[in-house]
Length: 285
Image (cartoon, rainbow, N blue to C red; front, side, top):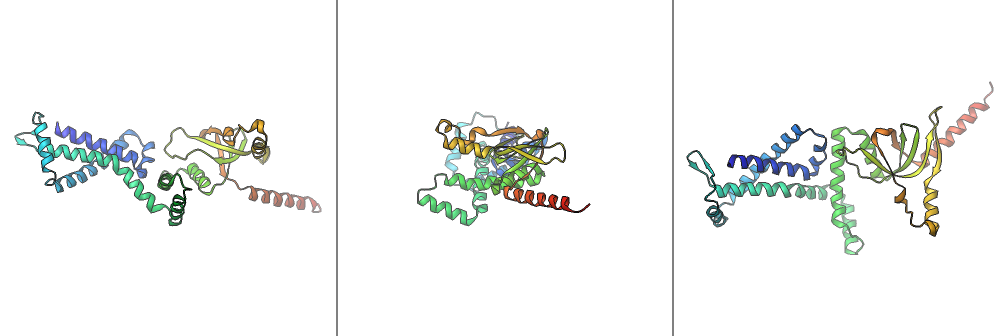
């Protein structure tokens, strides 16, 4: 019975640990059950050894507690052949193993957050907190650990699409998305980027939209959502329509191509392209 408890609790602690530790949280979502089991068992073993070392080192300090626990479980058949096992000690080890599994991932996440956050950003958040301007101090710090873990997971998985989406979010740049039927949306990513999310859906706040011509596949923009947002903001009858009401969502499977989009670069290119076309047509034949 004790051996079964050792295996089960260690495996459970390992699974909880890898599910909460950001360094593994996103990786395990695309793993099959067999690999997930092996990963959980691996980390569960290390958590058990850490708990064993901790419990053995502090056994003398908590001898009275162990004695009380022993008195309450005398009826439990924890015996191995003819050798009596210190049941209270091993229950303590299992308890510590589970506690480390529950809290260890979050502890490592916070350590990572304070390591990866730029010092200037941490100082800015601290100053705003003192001035009463910062209401999400801890969540903003924790967010740096999340983004760092997502980026590493994307690189490990070689998830090219998510990498472009992550760059767009980090640089606050729009993306141009071409769907399979030729429709084109340019907008800001509003959904989270999770490389392990099997829903594979993209949420976008559109700025402009249009389509690609069948000949030459050149983009023709037909709708300006920016103008629509301005109309809604200035018209009291439409004030209830904030930009979030116009978000669109579509599955990754419908995306034919996606790229970062800079409106200034686009306009400059279009101007240069049109001038070159004019120069070509003015040349004598």
